[in-house]
Length: 312
Image 1 (cartoon, rainbow, N blue to C red):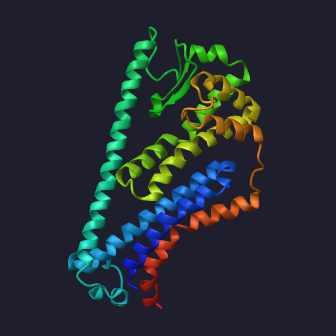
Image 2: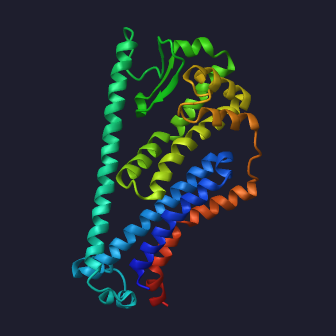
Image 3: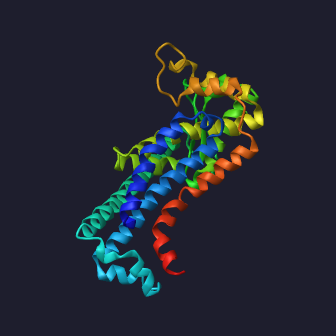
């Protein structure tokens, strides 16, 4: 089988099957950080399949591209790929995959620009509601307290000017370690740079809504980053503390009633924290991490196998 076709088939199988396997498993709820790593490896494998198939198809369709791709390789390596036998479909496939790459870059650029615009607007609104004191510089104090009747807390990313925002209603409701746990939860988002992961997953899902792996990646990332931040807080202050803090922050939003609203799956998060499900053993966690790390290697092996065989 020709290598580009094999790569496209492999990418299609991974894109279709991986979301079903991961969403039907129960271990991601116990190990959200590991699950995020696995999802990223799967998405990288799909993108690698497309990128390598595009490069080889373009090399088969154009002498100029072929010369650049195989310039450092011996002549036997080029002959092992049998590029001249790919037929007239090589050029259309290369163009289609190149258009997909350009579209992906455009979606990511749009997502980043939109996020920056929203962040700039929210930062301006914060300055209006909580103006700087005389002599205070923007970004100097990362904790901003806003007057508000609705208990809430969130992290506003932005590099050196990132800010942690909490309302006075949240300060009145949360006592002692519960407040510290909420702050630790938001700081967990910041330290792990979850905002970049959310941007990438949203861009891929918006650009390719019919691809299951990208839609599943977006949905699961939004869920798993909250679980990972919950774990950061629970390791410092206990599962019960962060669970009670979540209840205090969200009990007036209708998330615990018969028709709960979709607010980051708060009831499921509270149930997970209170159930204290056993975590994976170190050995199984290591095996899953190693298996996830090997996923992006498979497209590389498929692409380079003819060349490696020719070098023997």
